[in-house]
Length: 153
Image 1 (tube, helix red, strand yellow):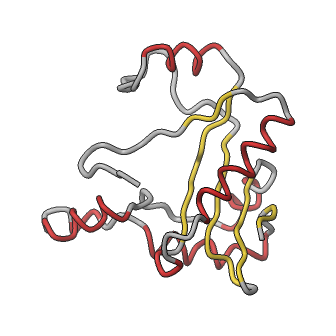
Image 2 (image 1 turned 135 degrees about the vertical axis):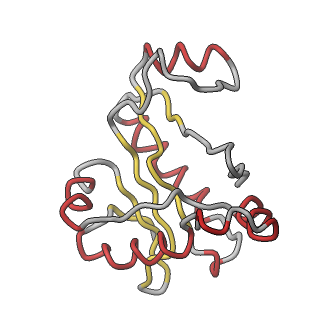
């Protein structure tokens, strides 16, 4: 079941972040780098409950399965980058759309590795796409880490 995140989800979301945070002290270990590159990661973050509560005002969805939060998707309303920022755009026209048109950015998308690849992230993305279309937001952007480890998933 997908629903809007609530303050009571704080500990569950922190647990998911702990499971998936890139451990920068291990980046010299080739086996670790290959593992996180293949399975995905989130950039390390310390989540503070007051900040989390503010984020709940945005679109912040959780995926609940058997009463347990197993994934989440947070959409950021503020623009992450400006026209002068160094970003490698897959297609140059995306930069123009990002700078010129109403959009939202995927702030975090994470699913517990123990759930396997059963479509939880896809479900969250479909739900947020529906929500943003209803709000007349035509674009969703996601910035992907390429260095020091590429986040393929």
